[in-house]
Image (cartoon, rainbow, N blue to C red):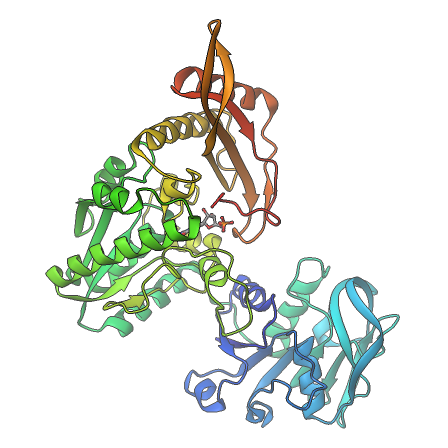
Length: 505
Ligand code: XMP
């Protein structure tokens, strides 16, 4: 395992993910994690992330200096390179030209750059520059305006890169990381989906010991995979709780019970009345999310008490975390309260078990394949914890829920028929809180508007709107206005994320 120390870069999680893609396990630690902790975890290789701070300031963020005592191999990226330079005696200053975006990089011959394009394109994002290399270090690459765009020490144990190898815009970024991990650090690529399963099972076992656990199942790939793993880890000591909150898609509850009741120790709770009455009259999206989170927790706490559980297992993913809370204590902005993270009450009796919290959906899908879940579940589009509540804009009621369920079922059916389902990351319908005038059978209508939303994404953090062919849109529009009562207008959401988010609330 390697450690990525987080100095607040927006790319920190991307570094950890790239390393895992290279089949080496990585975890993120705060920038000032103690050397004892790293030693305890058996870590020998460390990557220092970039960050918004300036290594030039007196009070700059500094790692535990003992990581440079010779026991560790360290790669510093951007701020990580600058702070390494400063610790070893470099002068750091504001560069005369700030480099931002695609930049031409001229590498020197070095094992870390083996096989990369010379010169090649790298992604830069910095003001500060390393003015001079420290003693026992030398430069291994430059750009047109930055003479020390990469350095290393003579021993080859400390490397610094001013650019970001973790972003896709750096042409050979992955190759550079690969060279560092395989050729310099001599790590073996053994982090496969099977080892991910073993590690998650081990983590669950270690965390809960002989205590009982309840596992929140929504039927999506994350919670389903987690339920299978928790069952594998502790068997009958786990109880899977599926709550029908009245905010599910058409026939979803029935399908989930059919799929899991025979293979897991499962309890089905019908709670739509409680959820819908708690949401009555509520329009604000954040308020809805918090009410749903609180209502869920109350139900889970009661179930846990009956079962004697002290832990609640949830399939929280990294994007849920990063958009809901500053994940590593950094200044990350809160975009929305994902119900299984920020929507939880502060004082909660249950302790959380979240083995996927630093993973992305595609990583969980890899794990899912090893748990015996069918392909149809693994490839299922993500569905948010607050369900249809955040796809009915404004106030929710039974009538709107029914309209949305029917419209959504048609949209998905047509997308599947057109063989588009797997190409699209997520597709759904949204019910708008307005009515518009239409004409049907020579009669004036005054009915709801449904929006279609379909996006392409890798991890839900950014997304492009999906260009569904016109004949498919045409069919969907026709079918919805003809088959779903009280809808007379269909619109298509053509915004990407950013500036929009995937869900409307
Ligand atoms: P946004 O709307 O933030 O969504 O662009 C990104 C991804 O996260 C899903 N999402 C949620 N998932 N609980 C979840 O488990 C939530 O509260 C939640 N809110 C959004 C969303 O469907 C998309 O896949």
